[in-house]
Amino acid sequence: MVLQVLPGLVTGGAERGAVDVAQAIAAAGWGSLVASSGGPMVREAERGGATHIALPLDSKNPFVMRANIERLHQVILQHKVDIVHARSRAPAWSALFAARRAGVRFVTTFHGTYNFSNPAKRWYNSVMARGDRIITASRFIAEHVVKEYHASPSLVRHIPRGIDLDRFDPAKVSGTRLATLAREWRLADGVPVVMLPGRLTRWKGQTVLIDAIAQRGRKDLRCLLVGSDQGRGAYRRELEQRIASHGLETVVHIIDQCNDMPAAYKLADLVVSASTDPEAFGRVSVEAQAMGKPIVATDHGGSRETVLDGETGWLIQPGNARQLAQAIDAALGLDTEARAAIASRAMQFVRETFPKDLMCARTLDVYREVLAENPVRHAPAGNDPGPGGQVAA
Image 1 (cartoon, rainbow, N blue to C red):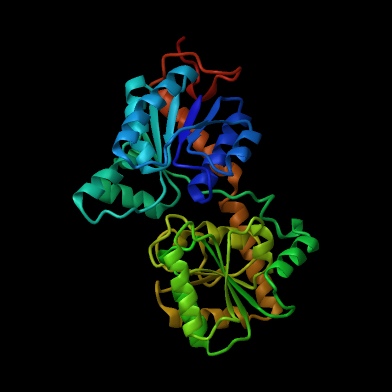
Image 2 (image 1 turned 90 degrees about the horizontal axis):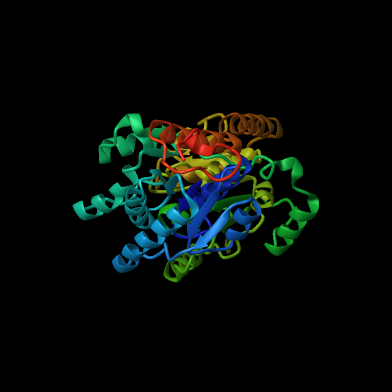
């Protein structure tokens, strides 16, 4: 039995990974639990065979976190959990103490660099480096964990995040889906579309893209900022003011959360990931390439591993609006043959490197590995011997 813990199941890379792995655990015949405060992705996890347990794991209140230790401990005992897999810092602290109290294995996925501007913050982050195994989605994060948190390299497992290649397949996006989205977004035929998917938060680089569009001095495209502000109303208003100050109201549009990202990517002529802080992985870049789209991303962090510079896209200096404007012009100036070559190479790269099934298989291998070292002393659930292998009853 594997219990994954995270703040919620709303949206994002950690959430997507948790749901994918939860489904893979269930498909393997093991018990699959996910504990979180809930969200729209709960239904998807449950449809895939996992059981969701609602707990206030999104809280950073010390008293709630302390109470969550006992809540998680009871879940571990009740369901005979073998492994607790934490994917975020606040619930990880509760999960760590609950797992240690129950004598079960503790695994983490280190999802980002996190801010560690002072010793207290570094200590708070350090829980993600305290697993019996530490999973990272990129070599960049693996090196970061070893360097900044002194994790033993022997405990770190680099498992690139995977995407659903059945979902992100351009051949499976119908014309009806494209027409519906184009109509909803009021996109005119023949006008190039530049898209930056990602929640509205400053480090995702929306301001850099707006400035790059302004520097081009042309209005012969549509630029879509696709993502929810998640309550960051002040930042959204700042973006709207920046768009207006450049006179780009007819060019740059902020789109709320999109429920059909494969169709959104297929509508785009170019996808941008302008993050000013390093991406731990770079899911947008991988999804865009799976759909055969050229990508412009910033030259740091996980993007160096998810984009083949000069083959599937361009890597530019973080925060450099001038370079981004040049890359946009280069991408939109591609002829049909060059665009097709990029699409073919991009789709091949993603199929070989980032399939969801490979990520899930490697994660389950980590579970087997930790329990083979020191099996939990209770019988695993289900007919399959599960991640613990042959354990004593």
